[in-house]
Length: 294
Ligand code: SF4
Image (cartoon, rainbow, N blue to C red; front, side):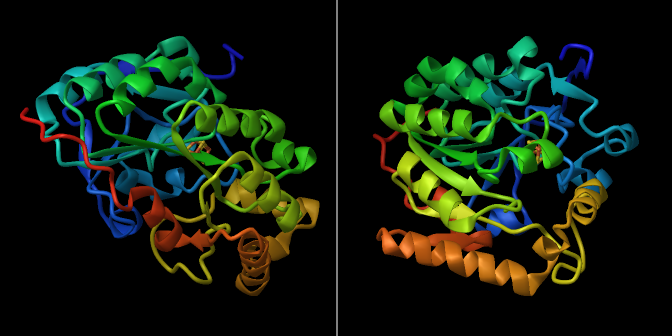
């Protein structure tokens, strides 16, 4: 594992960015990105297709997943910049619990800084079981502000997971993490994004067994629908073509899958929301904590 990627570190001038586009329309005011480039290296990841618009350097999109560069002064920047009214999404550009985090331990000082000057809402977007390492710090933060986790479940099929996201944890392990977060009292959403080839009802029901929340999700981004901006990485499209899953990129087929998940959710009194609707639930109605002066 250690040889699969390089870990770099450098100071940054910013840690909190004002949101735009998709995440802003979901209701988040800021994003927090602890590193550049993600060592999960998923074949379909949309981030490298953003190139410099995702804050990347050329080497990042050319060697996506092969190295990552942590922001060495993240905690200090947070202490400087947090104001207490932010709705923070961590992160649209990297998984905060990517494999390199196991060695780098960038998140513990970030979580301590957040607990010192808590934002109004903090949402982790991750697929990394490593999040449980930081559960005591996450609970300490949750005592001061509204903390939620959006945990990615992409398919219940292990063969599919290995083809598209070989460095991510198996489905059963991810379900265990969702259950552990929920049992610890953290609002943990199952986020079915991107929807990889799967049995939609099996995926939806397993997700609802593990999480008490509505289901969030998104099919593969496709240029047919989304003319500009981030889209599915070509490596993911190649896997689909090679494995006979090209229809999972077709809007009509995606619509049928979404409807099947909606029906499965509705049968259990839940909702399934895609795009800004679903991601908006992650930011909706932050719990009120006592007035803070920072
Ligand atoms: S975990 Fe997310 S950010 Fe990281 S490579 Fe996979 S899709 Fe991209």
